[in-house]
Length: 314
Ligand SMILES: O=P(O)(O)O[C@H]1O[C@H](CO)[C@@H](O)[C@H]1O
Ligand code: HPA
Image (tube, rainbow, N blue to C red; front, side, top):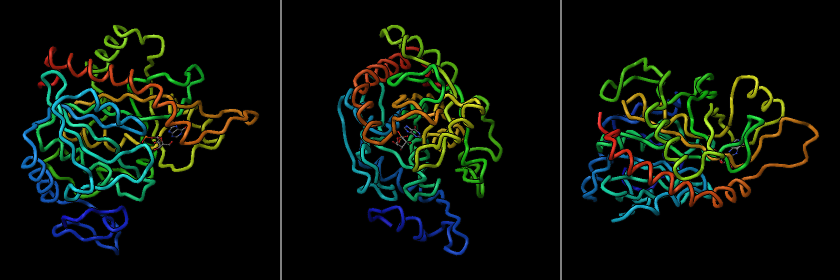
């Protein structure tokens, strides 16, 4: 129960009280699993975070702007999944941005790693139980909107949960009312106040020319899109595409957390058979490295400003 877990061993291990059976391959964490991890963390740190920042591929640097840091490797945290993707360091960092206590996930989890959506979203419910009020989710994605350029930062106004259409949804299974209701509304998943604040802060920092707003689509990955798929996504109204974030946002919104989503456009998705360029993960990480410092400034200023404007408090 307390040992480090890999995707497969965790997926097929039976926790006491869990609903998983190898026969059904339906895995859910029990409330006790979440409680155990939360209590373990609360006993290890004096930080009581109000804001959680989930750092996507190559964006772990976002935690560097915090002070009084305390770091835990995922493998040392009971029940926590571990990161298996390059660019995802795999540690939880508690710290302060100005007067706001924060927790940063340096690396998050994906369906394509073999994790269940319950595992992918496990940290979000831990944050909720720790007292977090706002979640800032960051990641890397490919630009579908023809106007987007590599290096643009898109403030997410909405998403399309493509795996969810096929039943890969983090809220499938028995609903635990202690977290949220059975049929949550998702029409306002991304806080309007936080989106406006992000635009204001971005403009103050001189980023307006590469700050965008749009719809993010999640695919399961791990392959990048075919051209026919990319064309379909454009027709569906998607501005960017990636392999993460939507499960965490869905679970965060389900439990009443405020959400801001920022996605860095690391490549232009091919919509044309004559295009020679081929996307790869190294290129994605390279662009993240190039923009990390600026994103860090944006995130730290935003968090400081949230506190001033009391946007964290309900
Ligand atoms: O969404 P994040 O984890 O930031 O990373 C994106 O980049 C990776 C592909 O290069 C995939 O993991 C995709 O989802
Ligand atoms: O083009 C992409 N497609 C899917 N996920 C991604 N993550 C970064 N770029 C991409």
